[in-house]
Length: 71
Image 1 (cartoon, rainbow, N blue to C red):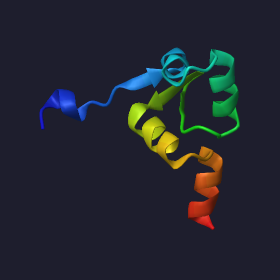
Image 2 (cartoon, rainbow, N blue to C red):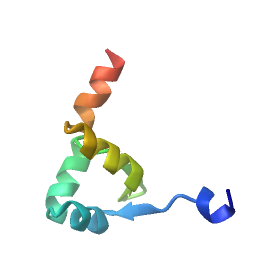
Image 3 (cartoon, helix red, strand yellow):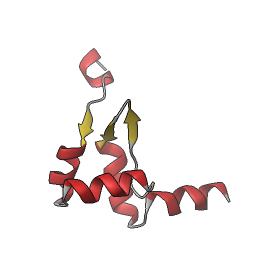
């Protein structure tokens, strides 16, 4: 594995909104509520494409998934 493969590119709020065909506002609210896998970097939300794809394939909110894993 080379260095480029090791570096993981994070998606922006706008990129995720476009990828999911949702409004930026909707993705922002989902991030705040923990309904989508997201990272907060300072004041900005960032997303791992791999996490978004896994979340989509499971068909439930990220918060529900985390609660199920913990309990």
